[in-house]
Image: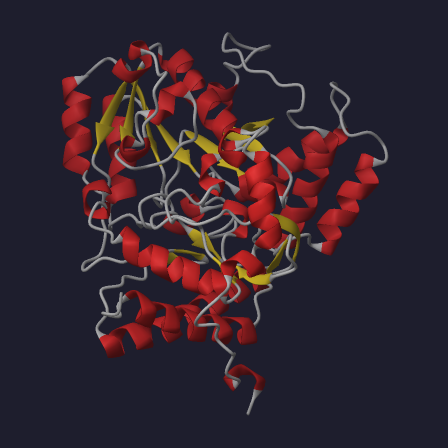
Length: 442
């Protein structure tokens, strides 16, 4: 047989206590010093059940846990591993820069080089500021929009995720938090994703009080929902008509779905764009940018404050420069498209043959396996997703060496270094996982 036709040996009954012994032991210890045993709730298995897996290293398309188990990775570090884990050139550049000093707390030339790369790739950006995460980028962009317009209200969309600052958690209805001030809640109003009428109604209701509209161009936390034709263009038109700013949150889509992000793919320009994850090739990074007129309102030139000791630090900028330089090669995006198309063709064939209620939404290498009867177009639709079926599949494929996001609604990601053979293996394992999920056996 050809390599791509080889059948993998499936583990139908796994001794989890043995397979994950080190992870289970470590999980019990770490919970005594870190809440829930994780530094971000998304890393825990609270949505899928079972014991959280702890990892030791990553390289290319693979993750390796504390017990030595190898996984074909479709988490992609929640997005940034476009080139796979630890690309040699990115690692080399970061190591060289680290030897000169990880942080100066003062300007350095890599900041300008990185800024020029992003500005050249994204037509809507004339100036940019670097921060340390997507959350910081969004938080700062919203403050800038309010400072620039002199208004406070922000229109967001039900189910979209924009990080964990007070100003945005109200947009994430199914994952709300206590501790959010009433004032922050009052300044956030929620529209329906893919529904321009709901946005226009809010703009009229709060006329003269709205600072901006913030949107994920592709919603990544309710099953990977792409915009219906005309939605993003309609938001641009509404923002112009009502004199408010359009903030496009490309923390997940930026440089993953296309070079320059979803704005380049859909040909829509933001007033302020937020980036994160993908820019750093694995280093912690965020950024927000826009026109000179808007960005010049930031201190020290203007009156809107934002700062950070590690913002634009040399190591992160070096990793970003190496990453964006590599991503300039169209072959990277062709590889991403080819491998994701291969995965979806294989899975789609099996799903259609068995008439399983599974949707396969994607844009480029950003995708989801959605257990629902009909396509999901908004937050309300996402409530129909069968999380129990996903959990069964998640654990089956985990036991057989595939790592998915431990959530039925969050985006999975593929890298440019996944191989044809790995995709074929994935199709075989996932197909059996679907059979397990829809089996009438208990």
